[in-house]
Structure formats: structure tokens, C-alpha cells
Amino acid sequence: MRRWLLLAFLLTVCLHVTHGQSVYSIQHDASWEMRYADARKTDYYTNMVLKQLGLAYLKIPEHTSFIFHYNYGASVSFQQGNLLDISVSLTPSFCSGDIKVRDFDLQKLLFPALCSFRLAVIHPYKGEVFSSVHENVRLFDLMLGYSPASFPDSLWMAGSRVEVEFKGFHYDEESFKRIENELFAIRDYDAAATLCDTLEKKIRVARVSLHTPQEAFGIYVFASKSNYLLSEAAQTQTVIVPGDDPRKLLGKVSVVNYQFQDLTKFLIDEGSGHELAGNVYLNMASAYGKALSDALKLSQKVDYYSSPFYYRLYSNSTTVSQMWSAMRGIRLFTQKRGLPTLNLALLSRRIMDEYLRLADNLMSEARYAEAVDMLTSAERFCAVNPTAERTEQLTATLMQARSGLTASYIRIVQKALDNNLPSLADKYLAEAMQLTAKYNNLSTSDSAGFAG
Image (cartoon, rainbow, N blue to C red; front, side, top):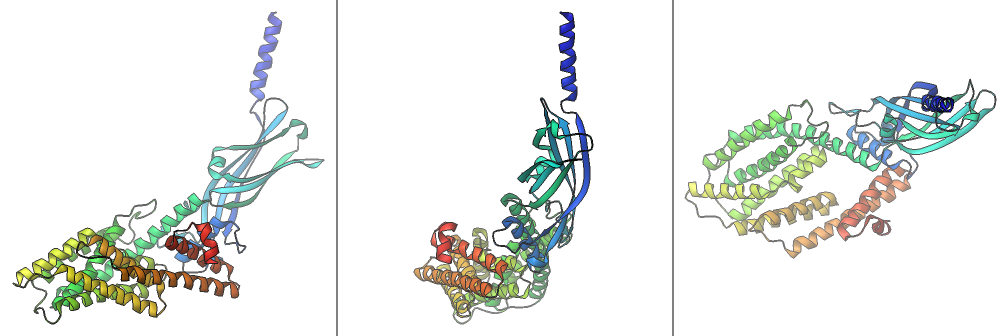
């Protein structure tokens, strides 16, 4: 009896010793070039990453690329029964190529999310005796160690080997969104640092000059919108931004905010040496419109990578607190000079007229995207201003601008296809479908037929 117990014990020990014991292992360094694919619907999210990188580098996606370097290993170990288990591991090393944007290093974010590979067991005499293909395996799983396949131990002998052939590395929606958000944050950070310098110069010039009340109002509007946008940018914190603050944005914003407060006090107290003259409401509305036009011109002077940040100067930089600050400033200005209180509801109506006039001018030049942004800003102005009312004319004009924008996208898509530029056509078609869905309350799939 004791002999049988001893035999069972020894057998159990042997099984535990052999189970998981490695009989073969390899370790290699390798790399993979991440490059834009021309074929439509091929590696969609990888193409999207390359498009965003190309935009940041101010070049087309086809000329944008980087190399993903990694180390991978494979091992063969015993399993229970007559099976051998293949394990694959991968460790990302670094990326090289187009990986730095405006002093920010993106390489750790650019590590792919997924990969596809083929395993093969090569017999020293019979050649390939086993293979398996694995698609869309998460790199995170490979970093922990991943056992994708097993094969009979009869196929293995001394001199056998395992080959791992990587078929591709790519991204999923989550990893693309993460990279896209970081690139947007870097773009806004860099543009905000430049806007800080621009605003500081404008404030310095305005601070030492006398202005008409209308000029003072226009200067205040532009500075207020700029200061709000800069404060938003300074509060942005992502994985990369602001990092070690390479352009010293945080310090610049603090200085500019102080200068803006000082400028506001100067304009109210002593910056205007003239009395109100002419049609006050038309003149002040005209000054407001000029501030919007100045913001629009500024957005056109910068490169197309930075321009989306500057668009927000006139499209998305009006808040309730800003509106109340402006109203308080106007009241203080009139009180200090013994002037009658301005009718803020009438002033708001005249400002709305300016929004519509600017939008009409933009549409007459087929600049529908800017017209939509301008009219969206007018909507926001109404939303945060208790003295303003959204009119039917604003609604109708905004619908006209949106229709014109969608139609212009369709023309660009057709032109890109006619000139054999599929990547450009895909880009604008996707944007057109998003706009169609947004403006017509359709799903993206439903809007495909309308947009096409």
C-alpha cells in the first residue's frame, strides 16, 4: 500500500514539475512602420491617427509616418496531457519619426493598441507542422504574457522552433480618441501662447492712448474674449499638456489677466477722452462687430493647424459672467460721466444686427464654415444675455449657412474624387456626414445617403 502511495506522490510531483516548464524560448527586437494606407476603409483608426499627426506637422497624411520599436518573445511549455502551450509576449520600446509636436513628445501615446500575428511551429525535418492566426490582439494582453495556442507534443522534437510573424499594428477608437485629444490640447496650448503675446502687445498699445467710447468698447470686447479663451487654455490638463510648460503659458496667462483687469479700469476711468456722439447704439454695435472682424482676421493669419483655436475667439467665447462684466462696465462708464443709462436691450438688438451682417458678408464670399461659427456665436450671445432675444431671422440665416456648408463639403468631396485623392475625399466626406447628421437630426448612417 505504501508503495502505491509513494508512486502516486512521485507521479503528482513530476506532473507539477513538467506542467508550465519551458522547453523553448526566443527573444527579438523588431520594428513596424506606421504609415497611411490609401485603400478606403483599411485600418481606419490608424489612418485617422496619421491624419491628425500630418495636420500637426503641416503636411499630408501620405507623407507622415513613424516607426514603432518593440521587443517580442515566444516560448513553448508543457501543459497537462499531451499538449504544448505557446506563449507570446511583447514589450513596447520607443517610437521614432514624426512623434514630436510643438516641443511635446508623443511617443508613449503612439504605442499601438492592437496587433495581428501568425504563429508557426517549424519541425527540423517536416517543416511547418502547426500554425495559427490571431487578429486584433490587445498589446496590453501581450505585455502581461499571452497564450494564444496549444499543439500536440508529438509535433515537437529537439531542433524545432517557433516563428512569430507580425502582420500589423493598429489603433482602436479609444486609442485614437486619446491621441486626438492630446493633439488638440497641444494645438491649443501652442496657439494660446502665441495669442498671449499678441494680446499683451494690443493691451500695451491701448493702455497709453485715448479712445472714443466706441473704440474703447471694441477694445474691451476683443480683450475680454481673448482673455477668456486664454484662461480656458491655461486650465487644460491632459497626459502631456502642459507638461513642463515649454512656452511658459501659465505665467503668461496670469500676467495678461492682470493687464486685462488694469486695461478695463483704464478704459472706464480715463481711457476715453471723448463724449458719446452720433447714434450711440449703432456706433457701439459697429465697434462690437469690428472686434469680431478682428478676431476673424487673426484666425486667417495663422496656419491651418492653429486656426481652430482662434475661431473660438468669435464663435465660442461669450459667457454669462462676461456679459454681466460688460454690462457693469457700461454702467460705470456712463455714471462716471453723468450720462444717461444706456438701453441694453436696444444695444443687444443692434449687436445682433451686426452678427447677421457679418454672416451675410461671409456667405456672399462662400465662407460658410465661418458664417456658421459667427451665427452660432450669436445664438450663444442670446442664450447668456437676458436682454437679447433669438429671432426668426437668426434661425433662418443659420439654417441657410449650414446648408451652404454641407453643400460645399459635397463639392469638395466630388472634386477630390475627380482628381484621384481618395484620402482627402474620405476626410471631407466624413465631415460632411457629421454635419448632415448634426444639422438634420439624423444618425451618421442615415446621413450617408443624404450626403452622398
